[in-house]
Length: 470
Image (cartoon, rainbow, N blue to C red; front, side):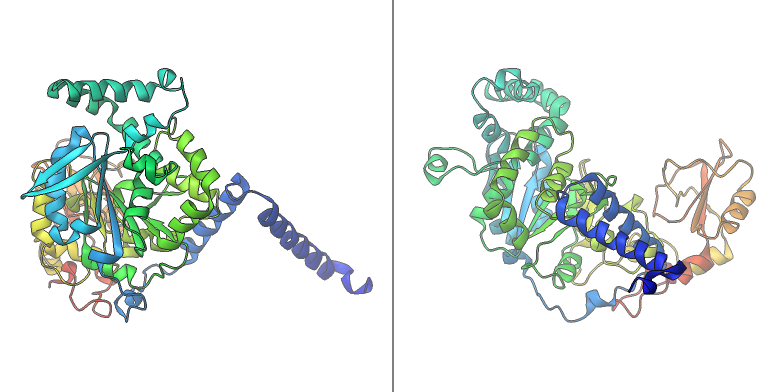
């Protein structure tokens, strides 16, 4: 036996065995939210992503659904709004449609009924429930309680202008608290009957029981329902699943709240039925946490539930015209848009996508928003008054002429689009393309050959994508 492990081969085997045993020990004895384990998972996800195929094969989404869903009855929707943004509720209700009323729960930092098309939609005040649950004496020293108290006093006094100013100034803090309160303890039925509000997610879990999925969205988030139906039809709600647009570092990868947060029924049961101490701890943390969507993730991590990043590329945190179409999602269904905060944006998006009965692919945005086929770029590669790159933190790719900008894109193997600013002569290139706005002083174009390499998605969807001249 000893002779069998001597020599270089034996050293390698011994080191391998030691590494495996060490990894096993780490997974067994370290807490679920350990920084070491978080870093290991983060590194593994990055490695898998790096080694994966350059373009995804999403044909599985369009095959037979093993777990078919009826969105109107199987998915609980939690709409998060606030006093300062309540005017968005109507457009959001129009986007969802009246058939979703029985599956919708509206949560906010105020309470009352929102009247919409002759229907009274209850608005549940989550912050009030949090204040009521504070230990005696804690409220006076809590900055967020003071801000909420001022807001409530202004609302009750009918000082609408002052209330809106307070809501704007403290909105993000109350928003973080709302999401944190989503994880706060549920009071018993007698206390609920006495007028206490049942906190967010748990309200939906109790009021809309046995739903297959629970989805939280912002009041400026638009859901593409055929895409969502196609995705959910292939996910098993009896498995513990936490899904969304992955952001954040290794210490706490979390689903971006504006892109939609999705939890399976099994995940909700694990959280609210079997993890009460963790839920109560999250409630306390909600008073100091900056980002509520991150608090959801770090709470779930404590009980061994992690964001499943295999499906992150279906979710989107941008407005339609500035949504970045990347190669790895070109033929993937697109579930959401975010940032539709200005008047008319939600209504315009609803009008654009209303009536679609099949999933919308990322690459199809090009044709949906009336952009030219690639043959047009072959004849004339320069579009004046366009920007198909958009804003970004990346450094510019140089200065000079529009011709030099085109050459810069051609010289970069991953470049899909370029934009040249005439006033500053700045050139920007990107590994994505967007519909973009129409600035007067900019010129833009696509790298036609590389966009064509992305495929026409004909094997994925019954439709064809914009960039190929549908």
